[in-house]
Length: 181
Image 1 (cartoon, helix red, strand yellow):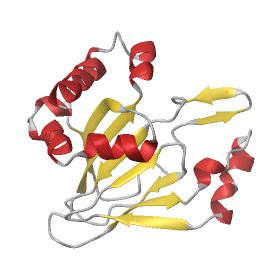
Image 2 (tube, one colour; image 1 turned 90 degrees about the horizontal axis):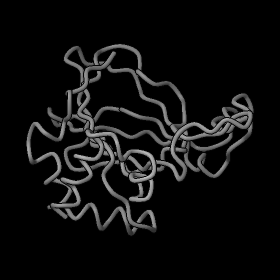
Image 3 (tube, one colour; image 1 turned 180 degrees about the horizontal axis):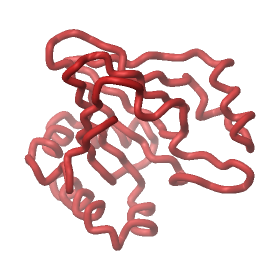
């Protein structure tokens, strides 16, 4: 139920990375996360009217001894632009769930019912930065024209060079980001 700008969103316009740099986002992310991060991936996604495209999930978890996702987890910065000035719900986040992980999916999902849920809405001046091991849930799109989101994903430099060195798209984005910093 989504469309992504392909093959590489950052190549369509310099503003896609320049906006991060001009807004001092690299320094803010490093300070918030507590260690240096670099840009891993950029997505510009249109969510079409209908059901949310990713119900409650974590991007990083370990169930029954099987690790999924990056460790340490990716940090995502998501902008949900409000193009018409009206704020609409876009994502639910289970507050603090990244501190409560269980070894089985059944036990892990039960965390959601015990923690507060925060709803993130579209905005003309806000964004969300989060550790992707937190439970999150994309909300249904109600508008016939759909909605946009710009998703920036950040990893450590060590993770880039140990897991993604042969991946041209990710390396090109990282190099462009680091060059502009």
